[in-house]
Length: 517
Image: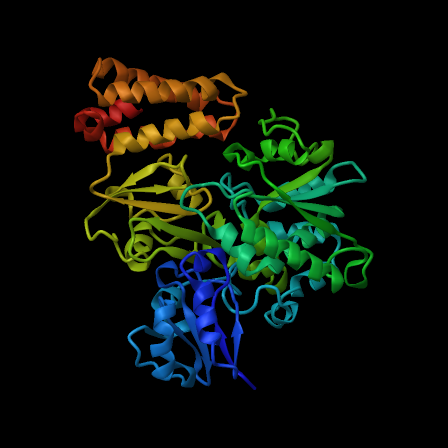
């Protein structure tokens, strides 16, 4: 049997030379089998090469094409671990070993397109179980698990499914929101590129649960590797009867296709997504009616995020109680945190809810990459609040963060050191909203443009106090008057920057809390 060497094929690894590394290893080594797996999510070590040994897989990284000759000459194909790039046994790397991977338990293990490998790792076990259950039993399983939306709103997934199950209509749809647009987030992309069958299985189970026979993956247009991977995986799943007519010989049928997004951040909002999916301009719909009752083409529709749907197979394979055994309070299960920005060790960390932000930044992230003190951390994407060091002991839990106006969102964490200008970051938030607003409601469409103008006046010290008051009033108007979260949450980063980093706005510390309230 040939020796297996694993070299990631996802876009993050390819961007730093993984293809060239694979070619260099293959050259002149015909007795080895190169497996193009997905990344493990340890970005600072990519490309990370793994060699299969009797003791387990041994990792080396980051490997460049010029390193390959010395690695082979030193005996990595024989399991030698003395090379300077050796990381030891992959599963013993602290960043990976200390995680609790449920949704991402298969990430980086095998060829993402191998159905045989997926099945060998409990893949489609959840689907087989769901086929023995009624729709209500499936929905109850999701309710018991405590799974909540991983896209931002954290709405209970089981409640959404219950609404669609009970809705009238012969035609229902399952829609996956894969329009991952938040800064500092990449978990959806890693899942789709590294374990696409989990998403396919989760969507099929959702169809069985609510009585839908058609699904769409609304994919961010800027993800060509994920697009190709999903299309190939869907084709193979149909060939092996995990998708299509009479799934696994049952009475249930489920068809699935990928639709590319419109390069618009607002299309990450579920109703704008549905408009775009119908071929219209991506504009937010007023609610009610809820998409669960009148969604895609006016039919009852489940709209869930990639991570929510990819977690469904774990819940059905291992049981809802097992999944609910992780986490704390109302935040059950695990959350894929994405570490980005000024950190030494960036990448994916999946842990049970309850870990502190400080632990993520320092124990997993390794502190700042610049070796300067960290000053601010934005959690939850470009509309998330900026947290000062005094709040880093907060447990990463929906309710804990909400207690002081913060959001967990999609789990993106972006760190800044002490050189950051927080007034400039606040300006970026308003500018981002002005650029990405769908324009349907006045508070968002006009408010964001005026926000940029007011912050520019504050920074240039023009009528400073009057414009500080005006900025606070504008934020309150946008927050309470906007149609959706785009305009409603844009004030979050602005107000938190003013409150905790008032000196960057020329506000005395004694007035920061008052002005931002």
